[in-house]
Length: 132
Image (cartoon, rainbow, N blue to C red; front, top):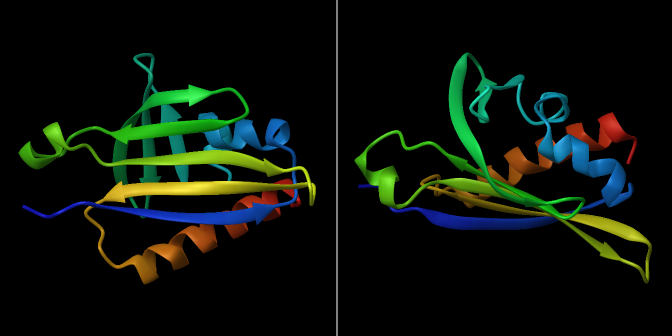
């Protein structure tokens, strides 16, 4: 049984939470920067596709213009009681007029250096899309 751990990182982005939020919460927004393709079923199951591999998730919780949390559907017995998830949280610093995306990625992926590179690349994609 692979042990899961929590990876967190913050990224500054020059765009308002109100402008960024649709890119974090909608299938069309997420498909512009997060995955090659994102679909949502009538049952509200998100399907994320990367390199012809799919992962399915539900939106476990959200708060408009603040955060969204996706929980992956269990892929085995280990996942049923300890589900992998990722959360994208928007925080603002009014002093410097900046928005930060705080990433929380809970999974059995244990190479934090590689995970940092993956998220840096994803956030770079997001910055290109929003011009931030």
